[in-house]
Amino acid sequence: MLRTFARAFRTPDLRRKLLFSISIMVLFRLGSFIPTPGVNYGAIKEISSLAEDNDLLQLVNLFSGGGLLQLSVFALGIMPYITASIIVQLLRVVIPRFEALHKEGQSGQSKLTQYTRYLTIALAILQSTAVITTARSGQLFGSGSESAEIIDADASAWTIILMIITMTAGTGLIMWLGELITEKGVGNGMSLLIFTSIVAGFPGSMGQILGGTDGIRNFVVVLAVFVAVIGAIVFVEQSQRRIRVQYAKRMVGRRTYGGSTTYIPIKINTAGVIPIIFASSLLALPTMVTQFVKSENAVVDWIVNNLSSTDALYMVLYAGLTIFFCFFYTAITFNPQEVADNMKKYGGFIPGIRAGRPTAEYLNYVINRITTPGSMYLAVVALIPQVLFGLLGVSQNLPFGGTTLLIIVGVGLDTVKQIESQLQQRHYEGFLR
Image (spheres, rainbow, N blue to C red):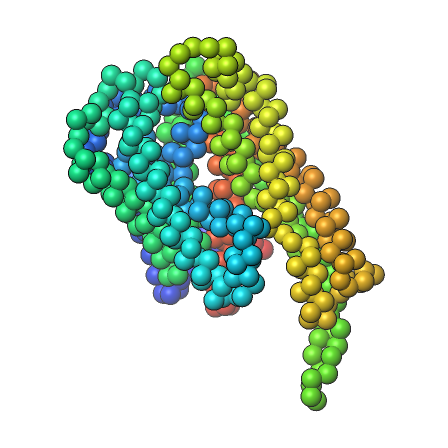
């Protein structure tokens, strides 16, 4: 594999693409440390540890590469773009115009991408305003941070507007950098930027575990479990159910078309990491709301005592919501009726299954059977970090646990496959032999 990497860097075109992608990733990391104008960086360093128990804040901070808790230029990170992409996908179900654009091919996809960009900027303005308002009130880092003046309470309106514009521009720049990697580099740009954000937080988190009580033992156990989990993720993510499709022969003039055999690949985990993000965000909202409630009452006490990431009720709800959103998102992204109609249109059929409605029913039956173990696998991967840290008594959390591992493995496999395909075009050996 190292020899293959060496050959990749010896290939001028591929070397240029790899170095270009690495340069953009380094630039993205540098932007995560540049503070927004008007922010007291010294006060942030003093109280940033107060945000460790806020799951939603840690989630958003993960996708910003640590920039959110530093209120940097890239404080919002890639999160507005991810949210906008998910919203546009969900709107296909309720807005016929979006579904029609999706079916128009490249031109329709370009239009949907344009809508996603506009929505990203709108969400960036909204989120930057919320972050700055929360920081001014002293609630961004949780209770106990009111005394630190992160942002001057007497800051002028122009200063606040400048901060909003800076954070929004940072999100737009991240979106542009991601598209540059996709166009001129290697791999999917947005995915690689998320990958960079996650990997950047690993050394510090593992160092905290190593420096804690029973640090060496906990470090070895955590590392061993994560290596085993990554191996299992690679195995499952590479697994797929292949449904054979036969295309009938047809005559067009004097030529014969069709008669070939192909297959529909259905992954065990069709929904990817989206269900975990949905479940975590939904469960983190009540805890975040309690931070803004000044008066103590029974509801607030119950949320604080029962919805922390180490409680049994939280884990049960987390697993249940992950399974639910796995089925929900799969139903949105995979339309059996659409696939069956396209097969019938081009003369394709599944051997032993009639074209049309019977094919759609068969595909729906298969996707439900595949999604059931896939959703359970996703729930187990999501819960492994919470269970592991609970058993070891480790208070420091790795960046977002199961989601971290899924994204790292998924992006890594996709990038390796792209490099391998380019090497094979030049008659080199691939990575996956």
